[in-house]
Length: 349
Ligand SMILES: [Zn+2]
Image (cartoon, rainbow, N blue to C red; front, top):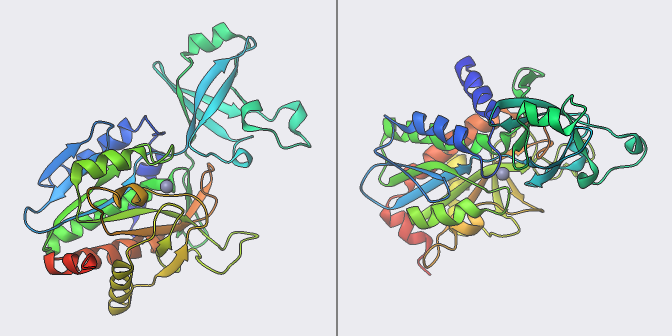
C-alpha cells in the first residue's frame, strides 16, 4: 500500500460534489489530466473527457464525478433546514450524521436532526431537518443558507483493520474516476493501440444524465462504466457474490445494461492470464452509466466494472484498497488488448 496513493484517495473523496454541482471534482481531475492527456473536452452538462492517442478505436472508461446528497428546500421559522434528495441517499444513513451546506458564503456545518417523534419510529426522508445551530430563519440567512444550496455529508476519511479498509463518503464514485485516471497513466507509459478516453460523467445519481451527453460527445467504440457495486459481505448480506478485498467485480448486468458477453469473456481471460483476482456479479438494483453508453449511435459494447463497496449511499461507505489497485491493473491490461481487430470482433454479429 502506497501512502501517497492513500492521500490521493482521501483527497478525492473529501471533495464535495453532488449531482449538478460537480465543479470542484471536475477541476481537480482536469488538473490531473493536463500534461497527461493529449486533449481535454467537456460536454454541455459538465462531464469531462480526456483523450490519449490519436489512432485506433475509441475506448472510453469513466466513473461518475457526482455523489449522493441533498438540496435545501426551505428554512423553517425556527431556523431548521428542510431538504430534498439529490440522488438516492438512504434515510437510515441520514440522521445523527454530520453534513455540510455549500453556500455562497462558504460551507455551513449541519447535523441531521433526530426529532422527538423519531426515537422509536423510522422517519420519512421529507420529515427530516438539518440543525445548523440557528434559532430563526434570519439567523440561517445570515450564515448564507438559502433554498437551492447543495448539502453533502461531512468528510471523515478512515483507514480501518490492517489499513486497507478505507472509509469515507463518496467512494461512489470517485473511486471510478481514480481508476480511469491511473489507467491512463499506465497506458501512457506502456503504449496502446487505441484512443483511450478517460474522465468523468455528471449527474449519474439522478438518472445517468451526464452519460447521455458524454456518450454523444465521445462516440466511443467500446465503453467501460467504472463504478461501485454493493458488496455482499455486509452484515445480513447473502454472502454469495462480492466481498471486499477479493478483486474488482466484472458485472454481467444491472437493471439497464447487459455487458457485452465477448468483452466479459476477454476481461475474465485477461484477469486470469495476469493473475489478477476478480469476482463476477449481477447487480440486483439500480443502473449505471453503461446503460446510456450502450445506446450511443448504432450501439456500443459495454462492460460494467465495479469496486465492491459496503454501505453505499450513506456517509460511511467502505472499500478495500486491493480492489482499487486490481481494478486499475485489470483495466490497463484489458484496454491494451483493444486494437481495431479485437474491437471489431465484439460486434461481428
Ligand atoms: Zn455510482
